[in-house]
Length: 340
Image (cartoon, rainbow, N blue to C red):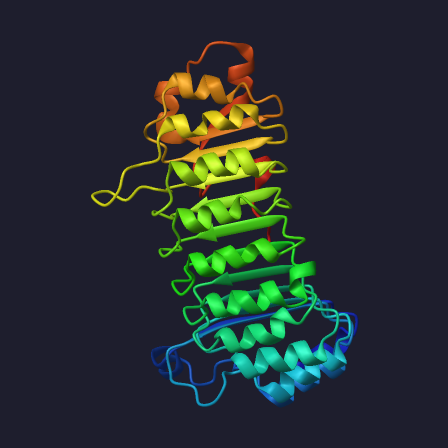
């Protein structure tokens, strides 16, 4: 077991992270493992020993069935929120690491929470978002939390977070549809929005996104039901947009047509766009690129690296300076995604 007494030597600790993958096989191989899931007494000890804690991360992937509301109990999480008044950043990764009651306990006791990252948690549902929506967090990332639906987004859009949330990441959330995306228009401070693998979102949701006037950064990836309609709406309506990344949108082989290269022409009239990345836009030709380069504010146009041979020899100093090549997994260094 991890010697928690060691923490008494670090009363000024501000960042605590624990991670482990627990499986029946691993348990058999190492019965005296140094790590065990945090229990209420251990969380209470951490809260008492490290009162200056600002960041807490628990990553726990467990193939065994856990009784109750997850590994992290409400009593311990409530103690963490009360005992660490500066706690602002929370990261929970793992299928059974925390449940609705735990999230509720944290947000009732912690009054300085600013960012929450939930990943691969099956125990989290819309119920947890009632507490989250009543908070003042500014960053929320939700990845592969399959039981969160449009109802959860409704709590965000109609709660106090509608005034405070600045960055929202939704990935692999199959319960989110156009209905939930349309609610995001109510978010008055939303500046950064990233949507990935939302299979139920169509142009109805895409056009709704274009109505969020506060957006400066938008990333859409693997949303196959979007089309030219969404791309044109973003160009014409998102007037404050500075960074736009479009990856594998509107195209799934054998199901629908890829987004047309001509749809990006409207960005040539945009006044604020600095960075435009287009991945898997197979219908682009040189005339499309030349028209987009007419955008007066554009500093970087990143095309899929598979197009290097086609566009790599474009003439003109401005074209060679602005046009770059990369992939969604390896973006341009100046616009790397947020590191938690």
